[in-house]
Image (cartoon, rainbow over all chains, first blue to last red; front, top):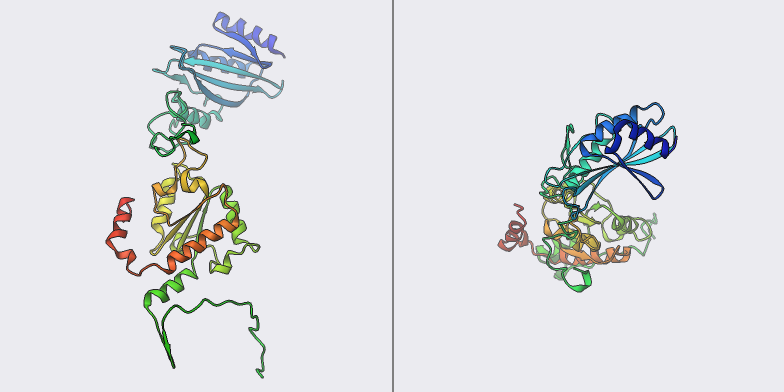
Length: 164
Length: 188
């Protein structure tokens, strides 16, 4: 099992909707957002590929990509073949709806909560989509680029020594 | 000659008598000073340690630096029995309400020492998730600078606090000024 074989299988199944890219020696598969579960189910079920382990799930915010501001990234691992791949979906920031992967990978539960907490990605069908790391009363998604890293309420650190 | 030789350790130090009036068979001083003396030499610490300052505090209370020399023999891991809250480490905004609850659970009189840059000001964590100094949620008596401070620094902070405790008026905790301070933090 290698990347060429995986590309072949995915193209045979989903056709032109899937695009591929090798970045840092790892295969990146970009798919439309509504196909994420179908693709993962295929990668999971396929007797040869058997991507049955979700290493990580996170998101990115690219404000300049209009209509595709938020990118959700799944790091999948096939333990038997010792092959990893990265699955990417993009959604507009106004309607950041992505189907939850919790039915397929129960480990996605907390990772999706974290991604919701920091980026506001709405995982449709998640059993308990609420903040996990930040304070419950936080009213924004702090890792979106329009928010500063620093505490916005603070005024006494705004000299050049603190770099603000 | 005494039949039993005990307590011959001449290194044991006693605190000095407070200023007062002494005569044959009596000694008179103000109540403030006696209470202050008792309080300051028996401060029960409540460590609230979250990170590297907590490690320095552990060294401070262990045998080498020996916080017990200053009357803080036993860490009380319950706010109900403690006088001195030692906040050592970064306090995130999510942890803030819990720290506040711990402070509220302490009985008066109570004192707070902010150990290290993070507890005092947020330190290097100028970030949306970190409380920029615990004095945003509870009143602080002594700030110990350093990142982290050395055990000597923490001891110095506690000695400074002892000075405050020893000189505190018995009426301070019922004064309008103190009530206004608590009010400003929303603590009754």
